[in-house]
Length: 340
Image (tube, rainbow, N blue to C red; front, side, top):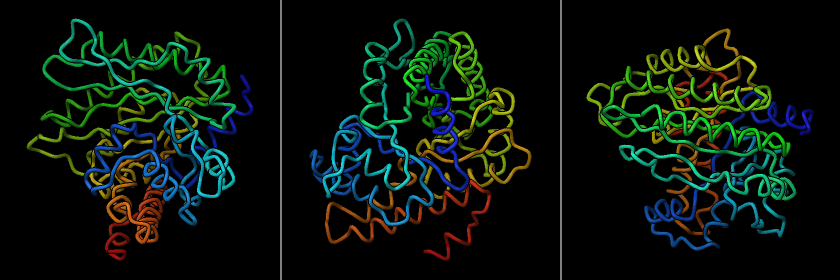
């Protein structure tokens, strides 16, 4: 465990005005997204699309790191440089998704736990050699009648803690992601309760497994109304509730907190981040780790056509810039309108 390297990596991940691109979609998820723009989901098309994002001129001003899928970590840019080295040359830290996806928890109401602990230490050692300096593990909490259960909360917290400890031994910064799903008709009040319960369970497990909190990045959901809830909480309410939960549960020792967009619209995710980052006297830096909220406009502009690369990169650069400003509390609606 190289504590100096871990500290350097963690600080760089949450550098001022920068955030993290989540480009770790599985082939199946990529296929779903590519279908929306009528692009065949081949390995080469996936490589081309990700190369488009990574090669966007100047995006390193707003993107500190990229979470890669195993396939992407082993691919090369058009100039023949492996993607991890290509990113590192731009000053962007390569990361890697290491979980193996979700399985049902026995005797539960369809709740899920994340697999991937078997053989993890060996995989982490290989990923370090390939250039990865941080990793991500996603857990999922669904809100419903009588769920999430105690079993679900603690099964996922236990897995996150074991994963985090293994990462630190390998000198890879663990990003922990206990995601509360947007799906459902639950109220913002119920989302706040579940988010707090999930984080409390997670940090209890971290303590039990001797995880160094100074070398962990939290990737968390925002406290928002369920997608189908009749009353949608406004920007200021989302910011207030989210920060209340984080201050109650997240140790100040953490180097930083990054937010997932979780299916929010591009602009909503930016507005919510801006409102939270503008708050005073926060214990940690706040920034973004978005997938669709950064990529959607670029994918729509690209549509698999080489002639559209410039437009796609411009769209991606704009979203990265807007979120970089939001992470400093400097984004305004006027910026979006000006660019429209």
